[in-house]
Image 1 (tube, one colour):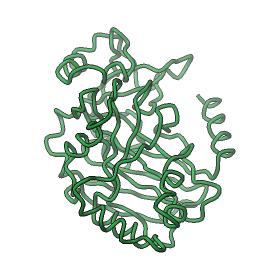
Image 2 (image 1 turned 60 degrees about the vertical axis):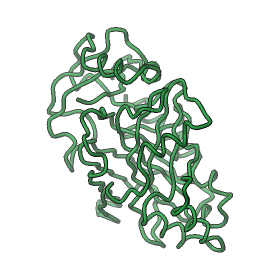
Image 3 (image 1 turned 180 degrees about the vertical axis):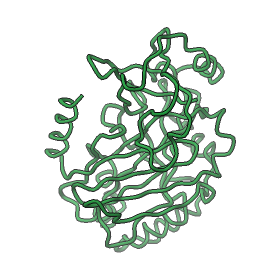
Length: 313
């Protein structure tokens, strides 16, 4: 089962539905539903944020008996699986590779990241409001004032208002390595900007992912029709448990509409690699799906790409 946020291609508003998937989560898929049964909408037509305001047992019951209309795959366009007041947060330095990358890019504060990796308290930071998140097929951006930029493929946990894991999706935690490396206090500018976060293509329910620590993560970056970078890793290297990260996030905060918590990256291209406008980022996580996004540079180019996508739709 997949929980998908979408809109009808013709005169559509955002909706929520479920579908059963065959092999569209295999490498080489387009990131859109294909070769599967119809998408069934929810009879009550809740927003995803409304669903995440419920207990986990209620969410499962609603997903298993949606009760709405059936739509053909060609009638819909997948959207980012986040809406309303649901926020996206992220964890940093949760893999050995992430620690090494932060140390390599830092000019005078490498020991900060070494200490964070081994500390009891994890690094958690706000990543995006729901309305800023890019969905499958939408353009992501690198900052116009940054010289070294990379995507960071991450398993993201979808949490309800109680902090329970409801399911999993894919997060592309775009990052400016040049800004981040200058000073740890520049982390918000390196991580939080328009076009800096993508989620999708859907949510795999937690009850269908028996072991989130045995998932394969793959990322391929293509440029001018050729592979510019590719790599593979596994969530088995995640030092922090997902429940631990969620507990820290909810410890002194509340999320009435739930939250998306990205769990950190284990794939970072070595310096001096940097993204270029026109690149395509393809992130695949086994059992979850595949998220594909083209790259532009700067806010103006992102706005232009967004207009083009709306016209095409």
